[in-house]
Image 1: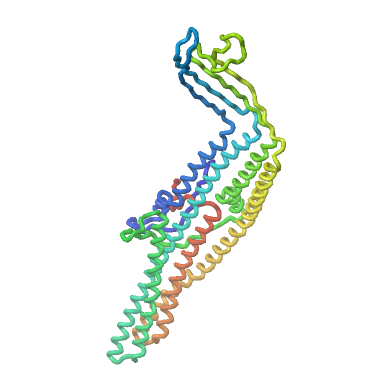
Image 2 (image 1 turned 90 degrees about the vertical axis):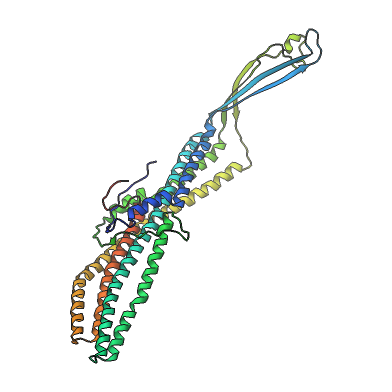
Amino acid sequence: MKRILCLITVAISCASVDGLTLDAALKRTVDNNPEIQQAKLRLEMATGKKLELRSIAYPDAVIGAVAGDQGGHRSGNDSNQPFGFGYGGLTQALFNAAIPASFRRGDVEVLIAQQQLNIAITNQLHAARLAFYTAVYNRDLKKIRSEQLQRLEANAAGQSQRYQSGLVDRSISVGAQVQASELEPQLEASDRAYHGAELKIVEAMGENLGPSAYLPEPAGELKYARIDIDLPAEVSRTLRRRPDLELARLVVRASKEDERILEAAYYPMVNLTVSGDYIPVTGVRRLQSQGSPRRSDDYISSEIRAGGAYTWRVIDNGQTYGAVKTQRSAREINELLLHKMEQDIPREMARIDRDLKAIAAKQQLLSGASAAAAQNSATVEQNLGNGIVSQLDYRLVENASLEVQSGLLTLAYQQRVALAEWDRATGRYFQFSETGSRH
């Protein structure tokens, strides 16, 4: 079966070549992640299972040899006479109702393992991608808060000097210091989230997590990008190619073939049998006479026998019937689960589409307020130095500016996460590249 490889364009710009890019993180995840490695080994096991299922159609052959020494005293014969002969047999199924279903079942076994590998790749790449976005988001959020903290600390230092000069009240100086200190817990929270995301990236890539583990710094920054989605067309394509849907369909097919293999016991089985003995020497006698009055009839010679064998088990006390009923029940359960998945996926995709549209509407509003907030912050900061506005006004303006900047970054992060969920929902999870190059 040919696995589906799809291109995905991710709007994350790489500003530094020294850090870990998203493409590099995903490539190392595919190469080293233990869950993916186990899925690859299960794919190799499926090949052996395929041979095992098909074995009933292949001939059974046996070959052997016997050697010994014939002793005793007979007229005209030596007392000890060594001997040896070879024998062989061949059985080939001419008719067995289980053979066609076993061949199809073996193929499905390999396809199931392939789709299980695809699902493992999807899950691990998704986890690595979300961890990468989370790390970049918290790093940039910490940067925004640090820049505002520098402005607030500069304002606190200025207000302290003005208080010492007797130009302002002490409450204004204390208020400026309190405003600056309010950002410190937020900076610590962003730093903890960033390092936690770094650990998840290393875990997804299958790297060393010991005390000497190296935590790579993600490169790039999150940017909002307009996305247009054709929901009906995407739903139609998803129902055809999503790996877990393919796996569910293959499980149903496998259940049907298993049921046919069990039902094959109702039908007769015809085998071709060939056996033979080869005796390289003459003069070997049987130990007991076969009832012939002539001694020459006791000599053993080489021979080949061929024939057919016919087997039909008519009464089995319900053993076959019970096994068929059990397998049929399992098949019907798998079919119900498949139908449920086919109904849930369009609803999931519609929800993600609504989330993306809501994020787009919020981003349009905030992007218009961003320039105004930056200009208003600069004006109020200048007026605060001249004593025109109060410390409370400055505090409100700075909080509004921080909310706008962090809000825009949060919307870009939410869009990346929503697109990651979209790519997972649509089964498009084998490449993430801004250049669109194929892997």
